[in-house]
Image 1 (cartoon, rainbow, N blue to C red):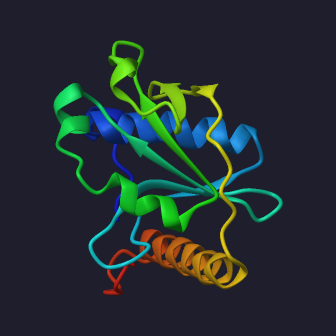
Image 2 (image 1 turned 60 degrees about the vertical axis):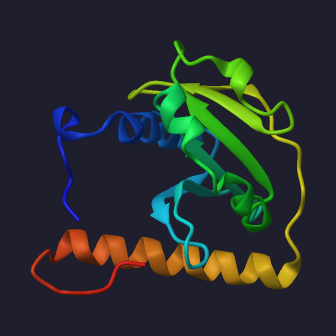
Length: 152
């Protein structure tokens, strides 16, 4: 993993940056590109101060959203599910029973809070452990880029 400059980031990564900054202001810690289960990779997973788990999918265009056939599979891995889009995105495309953030590369704002669907205790424990291992492996890779470790 390398720390890219803003110019090197793709549109969805720029949205994720703003989302992570906003969630940090709410006392959430975040990781990007976490794999909750085989075949799924969430853009941003957030862990709140009370152990709540949020997933945020960042969509940079109508085509990006319309090509995402897996998003409903993420619902069973979080307490709340959000979309993050920029201010030009046609938000009427997004399901009303999900959360909505408007974001740019510097910040985000929650326009619609996602409904809560609490995880079962065993699933919460597994996801919290996966979150911790993912964060630790990413940090280790950043601190020692020559070390070949499998970032989950």
